[in-house]
Image (cartoon, rainbow, N blue to C red):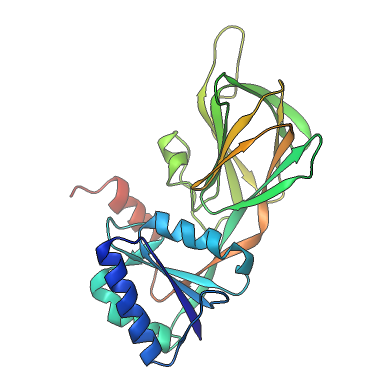
Length: 264
C-alpha cells in the first residue's frame, strides 16, 4: 500500500510525521506523495483540508485519516499517543472506507471559461467593498434577491464549521445535501430575505446571479479567490465524494456534544 503524510509543520506534528513514516515503511508500505492510497493528516481539521485539496484529483482512490495535535477535530480523531495502534491498523488494512458528500462550485464568466471547485467544508461569496446583492435561484426559479455581507454554502461535514457560527443547522455528514446560510442579511421594510438557512437535497441546486457588475471575494474551504466578470455561481452536491478510513466507530453526535456542549 502507498501512503503519504500531511503535517501541520509544527514541531510535534513533524516529529509524529517522521515516526509514522518510519513505522509504516518498516511494515512494508511505500511512501508516495504523488499517488498515495491512504493519506495521514497530522495536525487539525485545517491540515486535513489542505490534504484534501492536495489530492482532490485522486478522490476515487485515496482515503484520509487524521491525527490531531491540538484540539479534537471532526476529521482528525486519533490522538498522538495512539500512533502505533493506528500504524498497525493501516499495515493490517484493518479499516473500512466511508464516503461523505462534497460541494461542487462552478463559476461562470461572461467572457471566459468557467471555473469548477470542490469544497469539503464550505464556499462563501462576499463583496469586497460594498453590500453583496445576488439573485438566488433554486432549481432554475427565482427565490429571492439577497442583500447583505454574503452567503455561505456548506456540505454536511462542514456544517459544524463556519456554517454553525452563522446560525446554520448541523447535518449528519452521511446525508447528501447542501446548506445555504446568510451572512448578515439586510431585512427591513424595503428589502426582505427568507432569513433562515436552506437545506437542499442532492437533486436540487442553487445558483447565484449578480445584480451588479463587480468583483467578488470567494472562499473554497481555506482557499481565497477573487472572481470578476461573473455571470453566475452554481452550487451542487458533487458527483465526487471524499473517502475516510474508519478504524473504529465514529460517533458524530458524541463529537458534536464534546465540541459544543460538554464542559472541559
